[in-house]
Image (cartoon, rainbow, N blue to C red; front, side, top):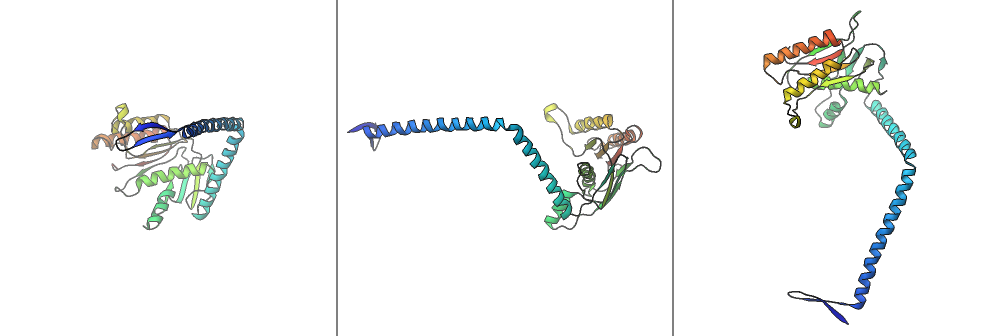
Length: 252
């Protein structure tokens, strides 16, 4: 027996008692399936939570293995060297390279990365690290050089080989960088304000074991004002902080 369900513009829909029963069974089956699925999920969640410590320990072990294996393969394939890390204030890198830029140049076919040296070690009987003033044209590689030496210091102190022919690095207790230019609209800070706040934080916190990289301090304001700020920052690093530093500037 057909039961009228709906009248449309060009059609009519009917059902039967048998179809209605099947529809009810299907709906009930879907509800039961969802209930079974949720119950299974709850049981699985409880089991995972019970083994959380073991899972976390396993994940950490795999992470260490993954990082160590990746660094080992990279060191072998890219001819990285084993750095000497000690308690001195040395920072001597020969034939250093920026690992990311080097890979990018190789992929693009633009030629090999030009390796370079950096020596911020104390001279003679000095008890403080050296400050390098780095100058050159735009697109000349100043920012790459800054980042490169910071990366090498980090890699050396993680126990990794480093992208260089040789490296001798005294332990760096803190790494400070002021590279790039950006404002902070949410806090009402201009590019120059952000630059000054970050530079002040570095000058207030850097100790003799710190490594500081500063890129074109003072460029966010008028030329002579910027020159005065850059001069004062370098002088403070040399006289007060007495740390190893690389200072890139166009004012020199």
